[in-house]
Image (cartoon, rainbow, N blue to C red):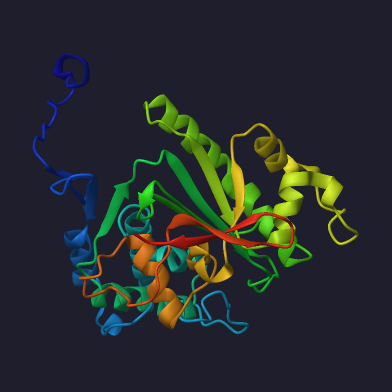
Length: 335
C-alpha cells in the first residue's frame, strides 16, 4: 500500500483496538461495538469560546430555535467570525460523534451569511450544552438481524416562511449511524404532505446506504422505514390511488418512494409518535422527551451520568394491535 498510496508522503499506520483519525478516537475495545470519542475536539472548541458563552444548558437549543427576529441587530465583523467558526466546528462534530446537536447546528448553518445577535445567542446555547456534556461519547453497535432501520419524520410549517423541517436517522442495531436535519425546500399544505416530502428527502441516502452495505458484503435482509403518520404511509405505498382532494395536487416526483416499495427495496412500517426517534431531528425538543431520544441516538449506557431514566426505544417488537389501515403497529424497544 505504501508503494501505491505513499508516493507523496509516507502512510501513517495504526494497529490495535484504538485509532485516532481526523479528530475522532475510534475505540473497538468492547467486542461488537465502536465508541466514537471526540472529547478533545469538544474541549478545544470550549477553550476558544468567548467568555460571554460561559455556563451550561440542559439542551442544545431552546424551543424558539427556528424563529428569526423581525428587527435583527446584526453582528459586528469580529463577532460574525466567531459565530461562523463555532458553527462550522460544531457542524463537523455533529456529523461524526455528536448527532445530539445536529438539529441546532443544521439551523445555525443557514444563518452564516447575515447572522444577528439572536443567532449568536443560539450558538452560545450549543456551547453551553457541550460544556455540560463534554465527555459524552457516541457508541454504535450492530445486531445480527441484517435489518437496516430508518426513522423519518417531519415538522409541519415550523419555519417563519411556513416551510417544514425533515428529520431522519438510521441504525444497524443501537446508536445513530447516520442522521439528518434539514429545512424543507417547499411549502406544503398539510402535515401529511410534509411527511411525504420528508421521506422523499431521505430516500436517496436510504437507498445508497443499502447498496453500499451490500457491496461491502453486509447481509442486508431488509430495509425498514418507520413513520408515525398513517395518511402519508398510504400515499407512499399506494401513490395516487390513495390521494384525496387535499393531496392530489402533489407533484408526482414525491411518489418515487412508491416505486421503491413496489421493488422491495424498502418496507414502510408504523411507529407510535412517542417512539419516533427522528422527531429528535425535526424540532428542538426539551425535557424528558429530549433525554429519552438522546439515549437512543447516542446509545447511552444506563450507567452513564447523561442517561435519562425514561422508557427507551430502538429495536422492533411486533405489537398485536393493528392500525386502522390494517398495518401492524410496531412498538420500538431498546435492548
